[in-house]
View (cartoon, one colour):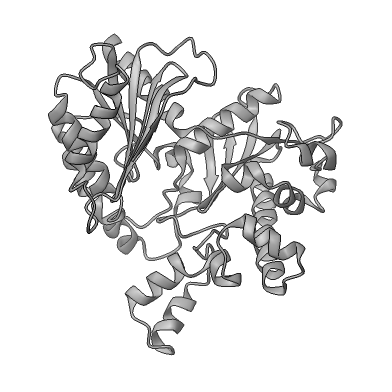
Length: 393
């Protein structure tokens, strides 16, 4: 369990009131209390329900959050608290924007559990407890998938039997939506092109790309699940689906074993044994062959998606790197964009090494930016936005 006080990132004139942002996972609760963009408090309660843990369940965890806030004079019962914003991983096609939580909304989120069996139940647990603790307070669900709901049917549809796909809700949904929404807007503003065309590369242990035009997502790399797309820390990303059939028929692996392989023993870990990009780069510098191959595969996939999304958008104003790897690895940024000069894409080595906000040369047709993501701030903004629209209505 941890908590900390701090100051925020700047003023947001459109935001009024305090918002508690909750990210409730299966074994942890992360929280941040915001007043505008000012961070009043944040922290994490971990090991929920694990053997030997003093935190028995999500209700106990959220009571700890309430206590930590009260110790700072920022209690959950404070009249200054305007709303609670909840991260919910999967909204399916039902929820395409932040939504004020009601009993009907809770029921519909429950119906989506088969699409996110590890995440939506935990998200619902946080909603249930906070609604019980503060039944008078507006609470809003902000969905990871919602930002990507604007992609076209051509981008969202898999080429399988339509009846099967529609019955089982098989389609591209995309994830990391709050990060892509925040970063695409900040990147366009940073290069003086509000509403411009942006390719966002969210690179952490999970990784995803998006093509955004005028604030609307046109394409994204993650699919029905977060497994599709870029090479990630432990996930394979794009894979011939027949590999799954081969593993079952030839290797005799069960579905659970294949799931474990592709989600937890693939990606950078599967290629070289390390899923931490810092460790991979240290091994790369020392001449390690496995690390060299893993790094090459990782950057090749990134470059391929940048080229594909350039084609989707037609023109690109800015490529934005974000997430732990995107923000902190000059080598990934440089290598992923090497060879794209004919497309107007280049990285200035000195600016890149210093980690400046804009790391492309002044005369580059396509700007390259490093934009730290802030999903909690984005959730708070969206929470207040939906409450404001509800009150006006």
